[in-house]
Length: 455
Image (cartoon, rainbow, N blue to C red; front, top):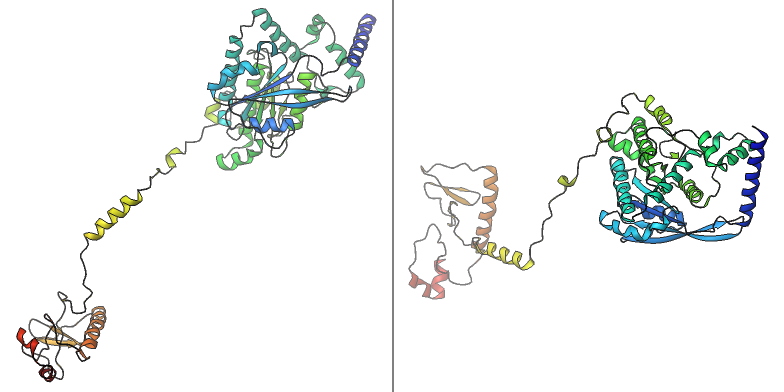
C-alpha cells in the first residue's frame, strides 16, 4: 500500500467520523418498510414484532403503522413507517400511497412467504416482484433515475463485507476505508457479479422473509420431508434471491428466531446502523443470507451434497403441492322448515293403520279361546296354556317355545277378564263360551236374575 493511498484512507476515515459527530443517522428523508405477501403468510404478525407489539394490526386493503427508531449516540428518535398491503392482487393500486416515486431509495421491500406451505414460495415471490415492477413502471420514472437506483443496488451488493471475515480491528478499518474510496477504486477491488446475479434488478432493497419456520417438523411428519428437501428449498430460494439481489431470512415469531436479526438488518439498510451478524446457512430453520454475501459458487455447495435429488429438477416436481381437501368436505345440508317437518310427520301418522286397544279385538290367525269351565275340549281343539288351537285333523299342534310364551301371556290376560263376574250384560260382539248356545239379541233385555242364572 503506497503512502498516498494510506493518507487517502485515513483522510476518508477522519472525514466520516467528523461528519457522523455532526449529523445523526436519523436525519434526512423519511424511511419506510413496505410488506407484501400472500394472505396468511404472516405479514401482520411480522409487522407487530418489528414494532414491539403483541397484537398484530388488522389489515384492510393497505395498513400504515410505524416503529420507533432510536440513535443512542446522538440521543435522537425517529419513526419508521411500515406499510402492509393485503394479499389480494386487486389491492395493488394502493401501492401509490406506500411506494411513491420519491421514496424508492428510502424504502425496503419485504416479501413474506409461508414456509408451512413451501410449494407456494417461488410462485409468491414471482407474483409480488411482478406487481412491484408494474407499479414502478406506472410511476414513470425516467430511465436515468432508474439506472441510478439500479447502480446503487449493484454497488451495495459488491461492497458487502462478511463480518466473519474481519479478523481484527485493523482489517475492519481497512474494510471501512475501502468502502469510502472512490467508485473507480471500488470497482477495481470488488468481486465481479456472476451471470445469474442481479439479473432482475428492480432498483430497491428487497428482503425475502420465510415465516413460520417452526413448522418444519410438521412437514417432516405430514409430507415425509427430509433434510435434503429443505436443502433443495434453500437452494432454489437463494438462487431466486440472487437474481434480485435480495436478502433471505428464515423467521419464527412463535419461537422468536431471527426476528432481532431482521430488525437490526432493516435499520442497517435504512439508516446505516452498524451490522455485524454473519450469514448462516446450516440450520434449516434459521437461514440468514444478507444481500451481497451469496454467489453461485456458494449455492453450488448445497447441490454437491444432493444424493436423491438434483438441482436441475423443477421445483414443483420435488416440492409437490398436496391434493386439495375440498373433495373430502361433506356437502352442506340445509335444515328443513319446522312447520313443513311437522306437516309431513302428521301426514305420515294419518296413513298408519289404527290399532284397537280393546282386549276383545279379533286377532286373525289366532287360536280360538276355550271359554268352557269344567267342560271337555271339543274334538279337533287342543288347549295349550289356556289356548284352544284347532288342527285340521283333530291332532294336537305343537307350538314353538317363543310362540307358546307370547300366546300364554295373551291367554292369561283373557282368562283373568273372564274369571271376574260381569258387572253388566254382555255387549254385542262379546265371544260366547264354547259350551253355550248363541243367544238372540232380545235376551239382552232379560231380567238380571235370569242373566245371572245363565252365567
